[in-house]
Image (cartoon, rainbow, N blue to C red):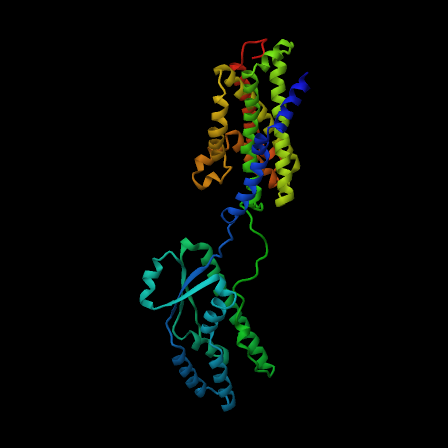
Length: 430
C-alpha cells in the first residue's frame, strides 16, 4: 500500500505538465541563461597587475658622453682603441637599457608603467599611493659605468630605489628587476674584460639587458589552492538547490488538493494508517528530489561539462538534501492541514522560495553584498547544500563538509519535529 501511495504521486507529476516544467525544464533553462550571461561576472578575466614607476634622471647622457670622450682621450689607450670605446659607449647606454629594454621592453611593459619625472615632483609622487616606487638614476651613472667597463677605472655608482609600502607586491617586482639589471651589468662587465684579455672586443648591448619578467606558468587558484568554479558549475548547484524547494511544495500541494476533493476520506475508509500516509508523502518527495537532482546534474554534465572531484561527497550531499525535501514537504502539509488552507503552500512556493534562493546564494555569491548575509545563507537548507556541493566540486571529502552536512541533518530533524507538532490527531488520516 505504501508503494501505491508513492506511485500515485509520481504519476501525478508526469500528468501535470506545468509542474514538470517547473521542476525540470525551468531550472535547466535558467542554468544555461545565467551561466552564459554572468560568466564574465563570476569568472572575470584577471587584469594584469601593473607597477607604476616614477623615474628621475639626474644626469644628462649627452654631457656624460662628451665627458667620456675627454676621459678616453686622456687615457693610455691607442687612438684606435679610443675610437672603439667611444663608438661602443655611444651604442651602449646603461640607463637607456634599464628604461627601454628592462622596464619598457616587450615583457617589461606588461609589468611596469614608467613615467619620467623631475626632481621637483619627487615629494608629490612619494605621497601618491598609485606608484610602486621611485627609481633615481644619479648624475654620471652612465659615465661611471663607461669608465669602469672601458677604461678600467674604479668608479662606484649606485641606483636609488624608494618603494611604496602600500604597493608591496609591485614594489618587489621593481626591486627584483633593478637588482637583476645590476647583477647582469656586473657579470657582463667581468665577461667583457675576460674577452678583452683573450684578444676579443665584441660587445653586444642586448647582452646587458636581463629579462625583467620571468615566465610564470600555472593557473588561477584560490587561497586554498583549488581551481575556481565556472559560472555553469556555480549556477548548476545554486539553481538546483533552490528548485528543490519547489519539489517539497509540489508534494504538499498534491496533499492539499487530495484533502479538498475528499480523496483522503477514501484513503481513510480503506483503512490506511495515518503514519503510512505521511511516510508515503515523505518517500515520494525524497524520490522526486533524487530524480530532479540527478536529472539536472546529468544535464549540466553533458551540456556544460560540470563534474565532481569527490563523487562520495556529492552523493552524501544529494541524499541529505533529498531528506530535507521530504521533511519540508510533510511540514508544509501539516501547516496546510492545521490551518485548513492551501495558501500556506502557495505563499511558500511563490515568495519564500525566492527569498531562500536569494539568501542561499542561488543567484550570486552573497559575500559580494555582505559577509554576514553570506554566513546567514550557509545556515538555511539550500544555502548549506550549495556550500557542500561547491566543496564536493572542488574535491572536499565528507569529513571536510561536516558543518554544512550537519546543518542539513538539523533541518531534516527540525522539519519532522515541527510536522509532528502540527499534524492532525493521532490515528487519523487528515
